[in-house]
Image (tube, rainbow, N blue to C red; front, side, top):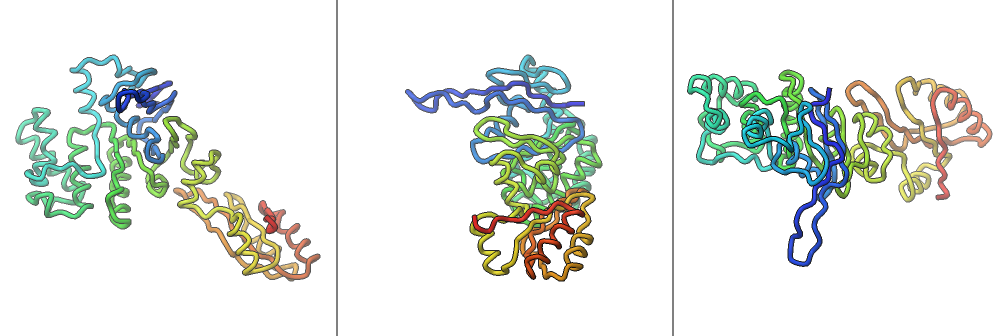
Length: 344
């Protein structure tokens, strides 16, 4: 069941200066996000992903189309309904947005104070959340005393204060080092699996999508160019922009100069084994070995996306030409093999 649905949404902003044309930020965007999933929205700067986030929490209204939460068109909401909606949507930010004058506990308590909760309820809830994010010992510390990762943990706790069903993450790991990024992503996965919170994250980093998301929406110049399960997008991107993102985290088949360099270094015939569920790598290697040829893996790797395996292994196969031909024919009976054209 979809908890968030954008249907044919367009968003145009006024001209940035006199005489300039209006700015088309979104163009016929349709997206559905299921309750309980982690959906990543990826794109380069200016793709429109931040505008999508601001439409979901009703900080912006679409110029055309519909934005629905739980089947209700929020573009028709009045101010009271919008306040109630925003209480059901948490938000975490790239730069943390903490109050420097408040302690860790005070920052987490703030949304509850705004919501008019009692002191006893606030104290209990803040304690629960700090324990969940692993910061109970930092309750009385101030943001300046925290590391970047700790600040983001406070941000996550604050976003969860009112028990939202939806959490929006705006480049939540971009200001963090790689190790801290992995810790924060693991915490967000717990938010999703243990608390059942639907997460929508926007990022320009495919590694974040790979580590956390169930499904991905790829945007370019205000349009959705590709969407699907993370495994499907990573293993078989269809759009050129998607392929560029995927190439940042997946070793694909070598092309052009890379292929020529491999052939110059290793010689022989260069073939790529397409590894999927059911592909029997051991049988491929056994078939090659049985025909008295030499082979080595010269490029590629195997990827495991939550138990689903795919990848490419590029081999250099050398030996008597007829023996290599027979070996490749025998090996291809066990898994797809593609011979690369080293002539370019």
